[in-house]
Image 1 (cartoon, protein in one colour):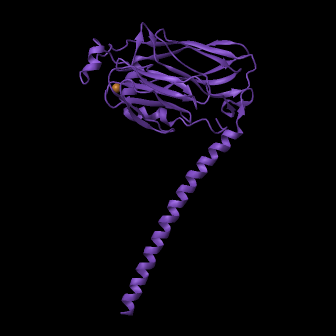
Image 2 (image 1 turned 135 degrees about the vertical axis):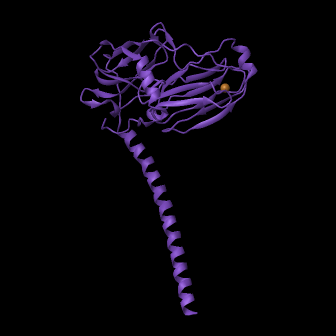
Length: 299
Ligand SMILES: [Cu+2]
């Protein structure tokens, strides 16, 4: 009997230890999460608000597409008769080449130096005007949207059908929200830099958009002519990234902008590289999500 009782006590003690361990683990995870939150606010507080010098420059350029562009892919909208009837001849938007110019390229400054200070050490006031992603003709307009951290982000529905906005963020809060015809805009903000966030519609599988969220206002998206212009750039040396959804690794170039200088920086994506990226498989598609927000000063 005493040995049974001893065994029971040992078992009870072991169970209590496990419980205590689990509670401690849970608490330490919470503490870590709190600490991370705390770090964020400390980092933000240590940023220097950027004051324009009046001698900002600009970066302009053209994005070309070298080699034979694949045929435009037709898509079927039969899943929703409302979409089908508003689009007699719908096409995919994942690779839009006009002549030899590439549309829908997000061009942005990734990091760099303003004088001897890291760009990421500056804080830029977010634009007050909302960046608006509309759902029109069962497409996202624009296909690529770029905005600043904490800038209002609105999603509107101009269609006489319901959409479901599924924002698959990694550094920011995800959201997945239905929006019926005539519904009020969905209004959000992204609290962290993230390039890029895929957006899809659960109702219409062909609908796809991408949002680039930057901690500064130095970004642009190429139009049908493949051109972009980034204004108000402080004199400095930067890493400029050109990102396209078919080229998830993007292209980069170093660019130095002098005081009041307008610098031209062109990029060229090519068809051969597209084949290589596709062969390397879908794992690469998550690469953009690995971009960390520019919090630290070590870039
Ligand atoms: Cu939809």
